[in-house]
Length: 259
Image (cartoon, rainbow, N blue to C red; front, side, top):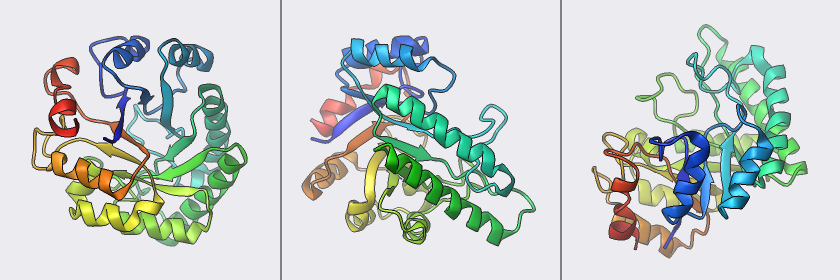
């Protein structure tokens, strides 16, 4: 059975954020992830993890003005200094939380920017982050995201992400494969996962349409979970979905599809 972790940005939203750690543990999760830790005290977050016996599986690099609509700055030529400062901040938090991998959101392609410069900036930023995180013993991930939910997102397909990983040329840059995003962009989930399994450090799940619990849409998760198991994938799978009617009420899929 795959190892599932709770995404606390998406799940248990009925509760204040810091109370979600206990709720995740009580629901049987052994690990958690969330988008960003930076608005909270890292020592308080670490205490919640320790109190409830949870592993911090993943968080993202700082991604600019999220509330203002930004979705990452790694491809923005005029934000390189801010990106590099964010790498340092992420390392501080990951060290305090015992988090072994950090995801980079490439961002929305900046309007009017030169395409070549955008690409060169992203490659250079990934090379910088992979090196700095590697020195700290932390893996860097890059995630393709669908352009229906985030129009203009710069990295939006598996082949593009793999090409970036190859161009960066670091042994510390891996793919984060979000099954929901890639179902929307390209399908062919099983063959893509099998082909790129050595590059995949983390997966995330939600069904389509609606981005709700597995079993609510078109993806055959019962089959796919068995397939991923047969491949020998031993990483975590993050539950990054929108509960249709409350987190606890919707957790029956764990037993029905992955038990």
